[in-house]
Length: 131
Image (cartoon, one colour):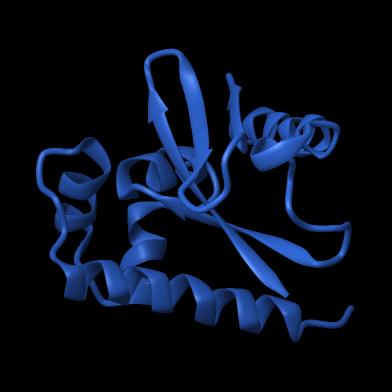
């Protein structure tokens, strides 16, 4: 299965997304969900194009992989995951997470990896829950 890498960034207008490896895969929305929906719409439009601009994969042959800048990620999930929660799942102290969330400081590659691994571990734990 091919991966379509999409960078998601937040600015004053909302969320913007664009693919780094497939042409014409772009999106915008005031919310992250709206941006993702718009990206899917752009894929459907690209399937109708001809030549080099045509979307190269059939349904089910690809998956979207979202790459966030840390400020956008933390902004989007701040109502769900607090700095306390991020400290618990990553081991990075709350004050440092606040600096990352506000853009005051940028995390080193090692810190970004800790955050990513913490979120993935949380996801695995949540997927294992049965009620």
